[in-house]
Length: 480
Ligand code: SF4
Image (cartoon, rainbow, N blue to C red):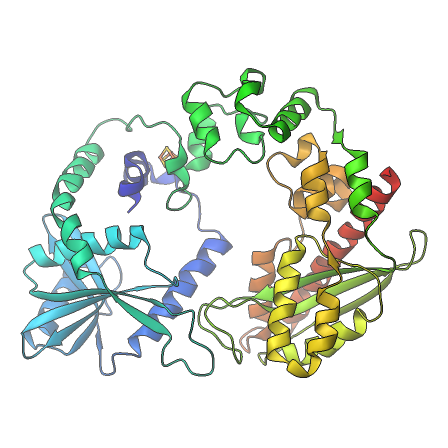
């Protein structure tokens, strides 16, 4: 799949392994999640036999697979196949005694079949078919977003892709020939950076290739909101910030371009004032941390449903009053919502705007909690309808060179308020780390000392999000 994305990607992974970055915690969490989903999928094939040889035991895996195939084993997990230097392992294959053919199931931890899944399973099936496996049907088993815990019977949807793969089948051999030719070259394939570096996923060599191209810290890529247009401009030879043609950018992008060139912050005071004048004191600053497991574990939730397990609330009665703080952190494996909801209602009671950065996220979670706990619907709805959002104010009316191409609080906070408001060097300093910390806290395998350390780190992190919001909003009021 790396080779399908970019020949250089595959070449570097084979010939310059030292450039492969270590697997970070986010990627590891993604692998772990994929493994959990695969194990869950296997439960749908009771009595299945696992080819449990280690990943690089090619000979052993092939031999064990041959033995299980010969016995017409009903279901085999991780069956291995080889054909002319290509090697594949199938998540699940099942044998049909009547037709004497095999069905192939590829498990994916997504809620739909994607184009790259067809490429992936198409290549595997090509290897299996050429290795001599009589194939009846090929399916992708992906997660079903209509499945709701506790009933996991319909957790997977089986998408029969046999017909869709037919048209791909003849293209695979020429594609592989190209790949093999490229990896046998003496030199790294000459391939420029482009949109393909991020599709279907970010390539692991982006840092290396960006460095090779000497992309300056401030460049065409710093202009926010350019999306695909940045690659058009790049391919036309525009990279340095001073060279970017104004007539190719819209009004907002031109404002950002000028800021990036001059370093002078842009502020549209009238725009800020007109937005912020709609807000009402006391201001209630709210931030959630959430968990979204692929395999649902809380009543009424489906795959990847975001469930809040923590909140921080800061209340500002007037611009010069003392801050009042409320917080809640769930710390065991039970459903966080029955405890969290009353505490949230208590913290946000009364009138006044509820300030949430990218507030649609908080609003969405509150709406879901209204469905989960109809007895609190009215109070939750009252909080939700008070939500206001500083993010669009920054996006529409303010731009600082330090934002670069991001208006996230982690980018805007330190740019406006200074380094003390950065999230660097925090044990928990971003949403993914918060999720991993929560999983560790609720696990009975985690030592008490570690749990306590993570609880403190989570409380500090969520509190920081609302505190940064408070200071940003005070800064906005000072402006106008
Ligand atoms: S960063 Fe882009 S050009 Fe470099 S190897 Fe990856 S996909 Fe290819």
